[in-house]
Image (cartoon, rainbow, N blue to C red; front, side):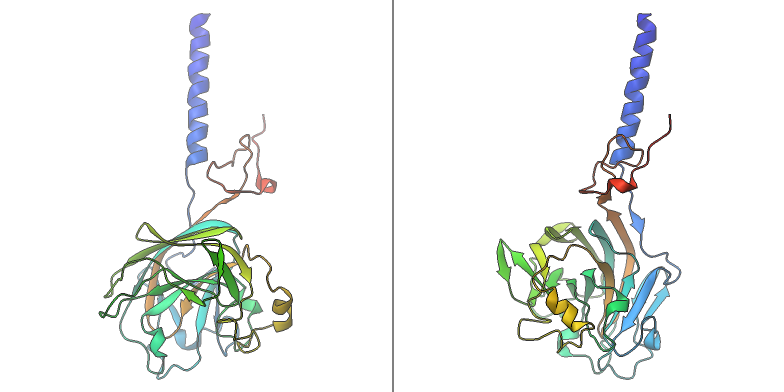
Length: 297
């Protein structure tokens, strides 16, 4: 009898261990299938949603490439490509590299300048001529072989955040990263926890932390309004001034310098937090127990 109970105990321990391993295993999802732009919406200033003007966004060799080969000159064709599902609590990681030369006409501040937009408004909600979505931009900058130029910075089109507990009204806030010259691949990651805290990481190092993201602070600084930025539904955004920004879309940026993106992966941190559920994950940070599933006995 004791031997039988011991076997049952070992079986229970084994099953418990397996369940714990399943709960701990991170389930990253790829946002890019490596073949085409399925799952993404394109919005380029001056053009309708999903008008991929002059093939600004293309896929080659398992990369999403911001491509200006068909451009003779760049004027106001600021573009973004939006994953078609919003998120609130998540980790996102990817690799990027700048390539070649900036297209003629691009602003001097846009040389080796791009990024990804977090907690962004949707592609469909942008005004026709709107340059940038209301969002939190994780800005990527390439070195210019002349002095320091940090990457993984924060820019705030239509948003405002706190740094070390104090509101920072600067439109762009530099990170503590090192400079990356040349056309090398750089690994970037962000941990986004709703409207509470966001971490920017470059090559595994945390380079910027900010808290309490909100709508407001002007469009690209407090002296530049939503109207100045040709923001769609401007009055609605004005009414939302100073409200927490806790979710939105992820977008890749195109603003006159070629850049490649690859290995774009997301770990959702919002989900079932009931340990009795079959889809419980120990690493979730925010509960959505409406998604819980239970094995039938």
